Length: 405
Ligand code: DSN
Image (cartoon, rainbow, N blue to C red; front, top):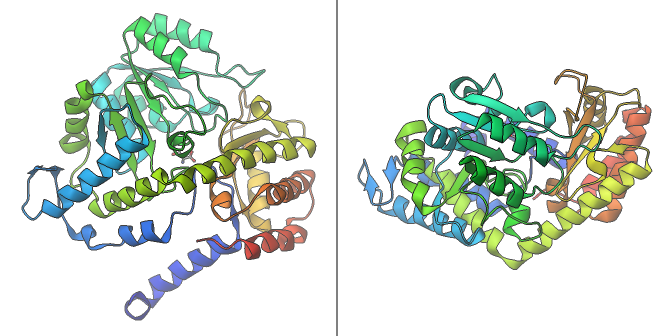
């Protein structure tokens, strides 16, 4: 119908489909969701207003929306047993963080999180984010020698700053976090512990890496990264925090929930509860470890020396290339990855001295260790200055053998 009614837009969608299938996504925050998830995203629920929560809506006709939202929430809790309450309404990870911080720190309240330049996220208190303007912020970082979080400095900062909310979570940190230590620090300073697991949520739901359940009071995440669902956010919390969190999401931070996205979240959560998801996540993790090892063999310096997750961060200092160079030259060859700050980076965020890759999307396409070794070899060639045009055919061979879903 779209082809006939709006050929201009339909052509753009077709071009994007072709772009996705003819190139390989190594952007660590992206994935390819299933056709069933996409079908739910484009369902009739996009037409339904359902402000409020199941059983307490402001408009009529919400009986089915209620069941959809309850199904999504129940499945979310089955993915993370031990958490008491799920709010499936956040439109994104940033919305989820804003809503949790507003509820638990309050206007002008103190928050402590990882700095963006050290691997954190804008919504953890960066000055350009509302979280940096509306809260009093202190930020911790990594040891610049090892790239690892320095828990002693987190403890020292927390003791001095006394945050209301301590945030454990990052966007470009390839290692597992020690949530037990974070919880100990939070308890000592009487802070709430928020674990932002946007990146590793899928690995955690599958149990291939440890999760913050049992340590954190609140979990926020996106549903579209390793979790492989539709674009959106999710909050899980303890029963004590339920009321504050729910009213901060609606009516505090959002209006009507995106019921079609919530339906698609329910589909994705059911997929994540199936045994095949564990096999997929184990492959994501194994492929990342192999990619890191192959990049290191190719002469790349790997931040923290490796990875425990789906993500690898490379420090380009000493190679003569910047993150921006490598990003644009990989794109010419047919690989999407992103430039990334590395610990102690002297370059600006638009240039950077590093790049970040992730294995979630390409593993969904069925790439295994041999194909990731080939990708590492192509990336190493690009860093050494080989003409990307001469590498396009090698990327195209991988794409043709592994179509996107
Ligand atoms: N943009 C996401 C990432 O790439 O990590 C975080 O929001």
